[in-house]
Length: 262
Ligand SMILES: NC(=O)c1ccc[n+]([C@@H]2O[C@H](COP(=O)([O-])OP(=O)(O)OC[C@H]3O[C@@H](n4cnc5c(N)ncnc54)[C@H](O)[C@@H]3O)[C@@H](O)[C@H]2O)c1
Image 1 (cartoon, rainbow, N blue to C red):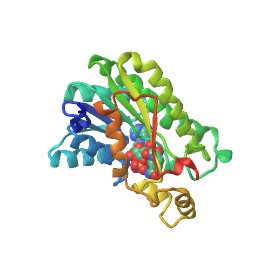
Image 2 (image 1 turned 90 degrees about the vertical axis):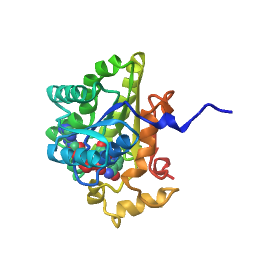
Image 3 (image 1 turned 135 degrees about the vertical axis):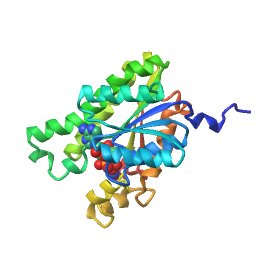
């Protein structure tokens, strides 16, 4: 008989930061924050949009969970440091970081060949440096607690990259394996989730259900139909909990099989 028990997915006593959790209404970050709170974690709901973050934190506390909102710019070291300080001051430390904030809608309206230096730098600063910056800032807090787990939000659109957005996300896959290599000694695991075309408000505005790209992608997916942000939360709980204790440097593709490009 195995000693495995489903309680290893629980996060009671853990403190999690989710970046990009307070933006557009039905966002993936919001779903992640709620899922982590439902699993017992205290959650720092962080976003450039402070009002949006407060709304999600209020939603969690109204349902009996533990959450606090923080306005943060993940590209700024002082701002990320203040976010970590708030986590420790409110909940006593940091165990989990979900690097979910990114520019997506903002950088997908032009092909890479027409992307100028300013847009390129901005996209890389938020989608790649932002995750590295937050990881650097939380590392000592996690080490203080004996380790931790980081999850970077990449995208099925990175395999292979067919846009500037995809370039930023495949770079984040590289960040994931590099940090996993470097942070193992601190008992910090670093993994990634690669969602398919998810029905967040941002995703639906970018690619409505009836758009040709959605039809094309769906035709290639063994599991038909787009799914909602909640469909990504099982992978998140696996990667940040004791259940995933032997996993690091991995990307879990949660996309109906799109990554296989059938
Ligand atoms: N929706 C999809 O289909 C899909 C698919 C694959 C991957 N993703 C990824 O999932 C994540 C969430 O996507 P979403 O659909 O919920 O989009 P979203 O636009 O609602 O979420 C992104 C959030 O990041 C925040 N943000 C942007 N710049 C920031 C900064 N400098 N500092 C702090 N926060 C900042 C925004 O305010 C926003 O709330 C993103 O990383 C996105 O690239 C989405």
